[in-house]
Image (cartoon, rainbow over all chains, first blue to last red; front, top):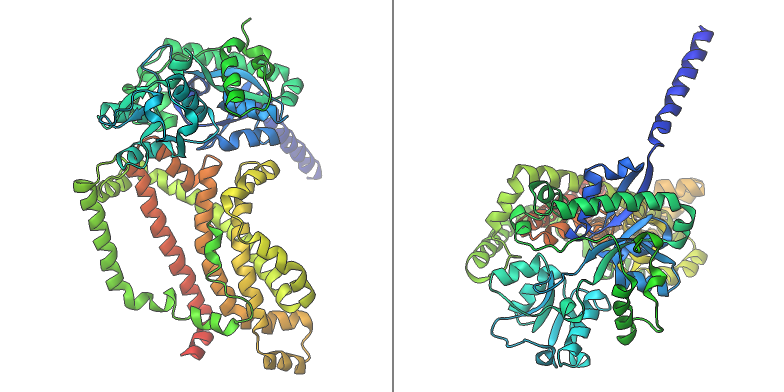
Length: 319
Length: 281
């Protein structure tokens, strides 16, 4: 009897230890995301099993706003964070050691773009000069949207320092224009598409395109320490993610693509179908990113010059 | 911002009698009488919502109430909302129990001990008005972005109204009761459990009721800022997906949940404090 109990115990112990061993085959990465179209390649790579093929399991932590992803990365609560170039550069400048390992989203090659400054059709706002002394809605001050709004106003004959920037969340921007609380707004898809196709607003300009074609905006960052300690895991992540990029570009607009993207964004399929989504990239060229850093210096987000290459890891540079 | 609303409800410790008098005819006692006129007003406002969305307000963010109700009864939405609310309520109750437990314990200690009172009061008054959205970023560094962080925020919000009301209640215990306890040679622990806590219950409950409403609000706010679960995250996601009917479906459910929670705690209060209400009448 005692002998039986002993062997049963050993068998049970073996069964228990065998379970985690099987799970250990996959390395789990915690990734902070924002559920927007920009992260389509990541979601695709997860759905299509590209990460599993590389021995990685992705545990996504979605946040509605992007503001908590980078503090969570700095604290080690997550391993990888999807964020934008300006926020990542700001964190890097503060000594948080952020490194970009994979490209995320780029702006469009030419107009019409995914983001635009819009105003009421009869407002007569066509250039930055028309915005002098007016109120412009941006989703957050001191972020990438705010930065390019400033740059566009100055590049099209206006004076960015005379514009009042008001923080309005994207979903409320059309209402703010309609109600007259702001004269114009820096709107992004799908709200841009909804507002323009519904006739509520007209495009005054495409700030990103006006400054530069195909600007790298969204990107995936880790900390330097994580990169130094886990070079293989990072390589596997990037390999799988880039497979997702290829699939996203090859199958854009297909039913499966729409199903995956509307699944995590919760966007109704008919909204998604109306959008023109720029291709995803695998490489961030330091020279394409440098103008953003220079604008950050010009508009006071950085105190001293920053080399774009200093925040780019090898995995996101051209081979 | 959220926390400041408590300051009106928690009167300074020097006026316990006013606090007691002020709370009796509040919500609980009148729920029964005002139910019908109150319901009529709610229905009238819902009608106004429906009409305004159909005829005056032209915005994708303002769907008619009937569409919100339809969204609520769509199969997928109803099911999802059930799980979304379950996750939030679980987080809320965890934070509430921890915060209320700490609040009662600290409140008793502060109420009984002058040294503790003088030492802790300034800190309590400094921490109490801190807005939740301001607390979240530093807490992320310490606790991450999951339930631990959000539960802490909820507990933090719950702690102060309970603590302050409890301390007030303890200080308002009639000296004759304490003298009686002494006459019966009760030890300190027994005095607290058998005399001081029961006598302070009306105050403690008033703190708990304020805190319960706060806990729900703070849970939703914390979920809006961080993490991918619960009511707050659902509201944000639906708003950004331009699905305002689903968003308002969650808002309507949230209102109903808040009402139900208050109803429950008022019922418990009336049951537990029957002696107290009998005295008041």
